[in-house]
Length: 471
Image 1 (cartoon, helix red, strand yellow):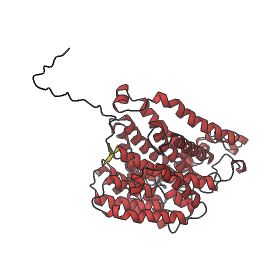
Image 2 (cartoon, helix red, strand yellow):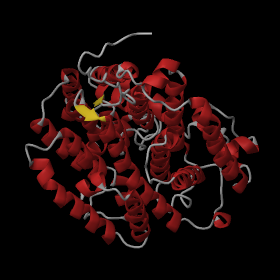
Image 3 (cartoon, one colour):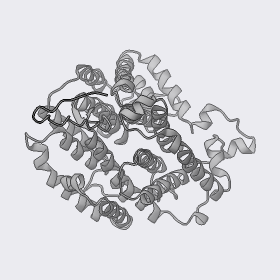
Image 4 (spheres, one colour):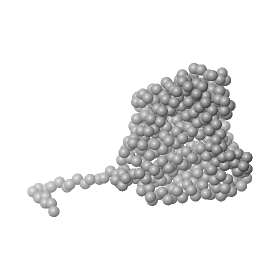
């Protein structure tokens, strides 16, 4: 099935397929269960075959793992486990590392650094599921870097892999649209809206919508073929933005907007020579339509919600509007600052090895019982100094991406993938597939993105004693 998705010349068919799949999953989990296992089983020979190139292997990973949020929304557990993305991603990464050469020793140290925290628990309350819930995200990031770092991937296959992420996000979009009530029936407040997310976790749906909008924007801006129809790409992009904003969950949409901003910055900084050499879009031509699309969608949703959307993004709450609470960074971040500060205090009490994987929610004095939403503070609280070194190594990899390719667009896409993955970890930790997958994809060495080659005509051969003169 993966090969059909990669080689298909009928992208509209696959767009419609995933729209229908998302709609069906709104009523029953079995269509997704059947499709997931059909795709998984048909891909086993690609996974195990020694001659499978890393480009195809990465496509298998990308598509299967991107089904994670749709599986959770559809209630497929236990047939597709709730944490399927983490378990399957971990397995495929380990198999891939065995198949392909390891090219990144610092990432191996990242793995080693987070292992000691598995050996103890200062709270004496951590279960095996708590360990898996908190540990596998960071573990998979390190594995993804080990597998993908400096492996060669063609520019065309990079675009294909981005498509394979967008397709499941389209299914998530369809699921949310079917399950969500009419807009005039939704009571919008100043907190995340589960109803607009189709009855599922608004943070995860917002993350999917922001990711879909970000990746589809790359295709839309550069006039790459996604559906093959400009109007259809624009419609899908608008729907991602619309439904994502309606969830009132800000983290996923802000991450998507940030990724779009990074792409625009890299293209804006491209020199005239680079624009010609790499056949880049002239940012001035598309900048105003892009801003109009983004700002226009925000304006429409703000109008539909009687101005509540703007207040939500301004950090207002019912308490701050009533005057009973003052607007602080903690209220703006929906309590994440208190969780962050509680993690830092726990780190101070356990500076070297931390409190142990999964222990922060039980051992922290502030916001006890709530899991960390910021992966950086979780690394400090649960892994101590070793977690800080892990994060420094992660940032080190990201810092090399802006100069990773002479083509500004490619460098921009890789940098944006990394930063969106990293930023997602600051509002949803690393509990979804987004951070490990995007950070891993950003590590590829992209080949073949060198613009349009100039065709140089060879001089015609001289016949006989014909003389050549120059004027």
